[in-house]
Amino acid sequence: MNRTKIHTTKKLEKLVKKLISTDRNADCGKLGKWNATIFYVDRKKCWLLTNGLTKYNVVLTDIKTSELKNIESIFKESFYGQLT
Figure 1 (tube, rainbow, N blue to C red):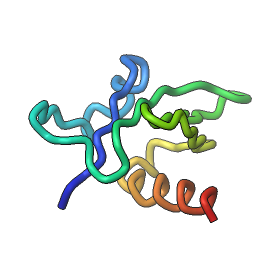
Figure 2: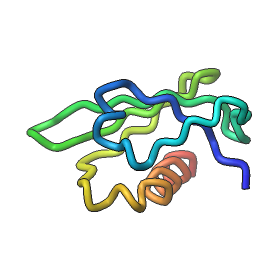
Figure 3: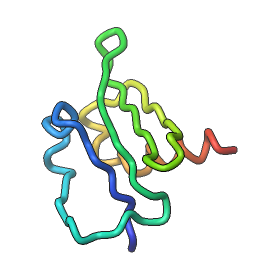
Figure 4: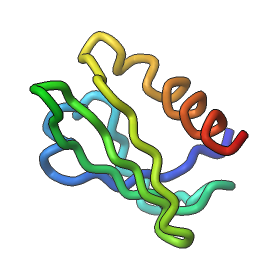
């Protein structure tokens, strides 16, 4: 399975260390290179993911630590939901 590479900021990396793999030889996948950062709105964690080529943004709101194991499906649902 070819996964999409997402580059995280140090701030986000600290929160999701268990999810991060560092395969530098992997290609960018079908969706290209993405960058991710975290910001807070009313003390709720939100993620901003930006595609490097198109500058398309996906915002994931109110991400809880318990949801991190499902972050892949949360991202897919949000991304595909925006596209449709």
